[in-house]
Image 1 (cartoon, rainbow, N blue to C red):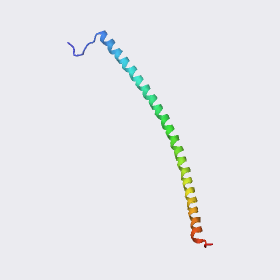
Image 2: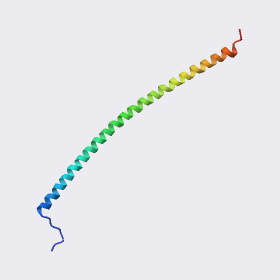
Image 3: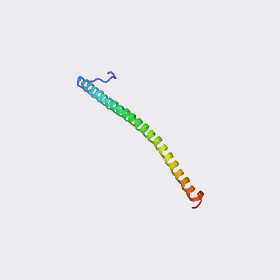
Image 4: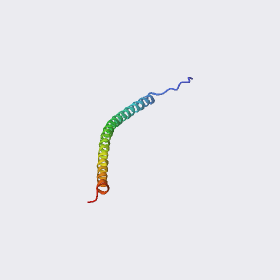
Amino acid sequence: MSDTPTCDPTQLDRIEQLLREGNALQAEALAAQQSLVEAQRANLEKAGLINDQALQMQKQGNWVTVAIIVVVLGMVAYMSYLLFAKPFA
């Protein structure tokens, strides 16, 4: 008697079929992963563009805020001049 197991041809055919099915499923899974990676890359590119636009808007918003503060301070200074520095007529 030998210690190596023997298989009949039907078992070998079944094993071969299962291996082929496993390889097909593995190929499908790899294709799905690749499409997900491509979608993620596209989303990251879009997110980068959106972040750049948001930064641009923030910079513009900062200048607008500074301009508004300057105008308000100018108005406060002018009103103070009218109320306190100008002699009463």
